Amino acid sequence: MSTYTTKLFGELVFDDNNRIGNQEFFSLSYKNVPMYISFDDFDGNEEKIAKCIEIIDRYSEIHEIALKAIVENYTSNEVIRYYFKYHFESLDKEILTQLFGDSDYNTFSIEKTSSQFEYPNLVFTQEFDEICLSVDYQLSKDYSEEILSVKMDENLNVLDFAREN
Image (cartoon, rainbow, N blue to C red):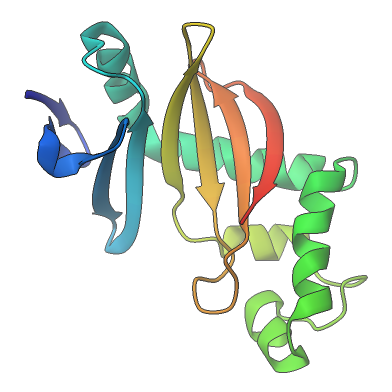
């Protein structure tokens, strides 16, 4: 068992109570919005976990960087565009108007819509011994299971985008 203290979320206790397979999973909230943080396959690597805690302490900055990246890359990134287009193709007009303020994909505002995203979930993984961060947004927990992920490195540089369900 290891305990780490975050500035925004208090103590994260790495033990069997928070473990699902090789993943440590923490159900939390930020400004009364439910969210989670998970660590995939860090198995006691205290140095890497400590670095992740430093990153977690920058949560509001992470949120801002990710939203800005979504807006800036919307027109040029097919993954981002398709994430939103999928919703316009699969949801009723009433729900679209509720979520986007518009029921027409060609006229909705990415700026307005992205500013309405709730706080993201954070998923930490390691690739080639490097920390990778997935900042996961869900447009609506009531109407869609689709997730738009902003992939970042440990320095919060945006690397890529992914759509998951």
